[in-house]
Length: 224
Image (cartoon, rainbow, N blue to C red; front, side, top):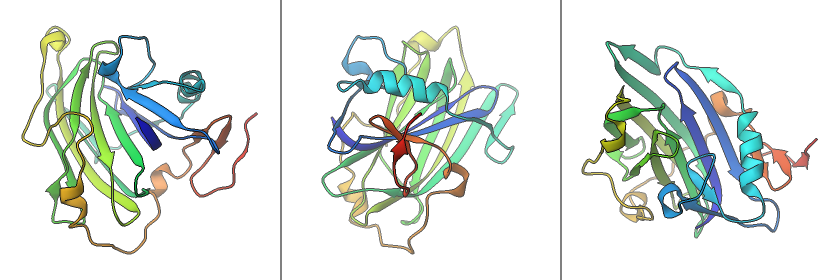
């Protein structure tokens, strides 16, 4: 799968979140596969298939800043957890794929997942949910497509930690699907809103472009 960009988040039971954004370098291609497509070692929710991106991802993600979430976004009560997040202004391009992937904490099993369109009365987006046995994490994949050049969503997930039963746990709901499902039925209803910047909360997170580290909207500079 040839992608324009990846947004990868990893949530941990302690209530910390790591966010990483990745794009290919100039005149390079970022080819990835989903976790279940190959029985090969990997460091995250995707396999990187060329150009040494797997090594670059592992190094950069390890150095990515970890942030402690506030009570408004992450809650725990009697062994039940909830996490909320939202993204605005994810850049999209016709004919190009951008994927968001959220890895839940180790041995977390989702009870409920909602990913809604704030521009369309809270209609839910379809998504893929995969139990990643190599990393002992459930992963939520969302394909980000919009004919307007930017994509917004709000995510709410409830889960429990279930180490003993994790290996046989499953999750499905009416909005889950296999990888690659197109969201055209949603995007044709999305109306253009005032252009908004990507959340300030994530504005300083780094992304990788080949051998350079840059932020969206800034001029690339050589990595040290």
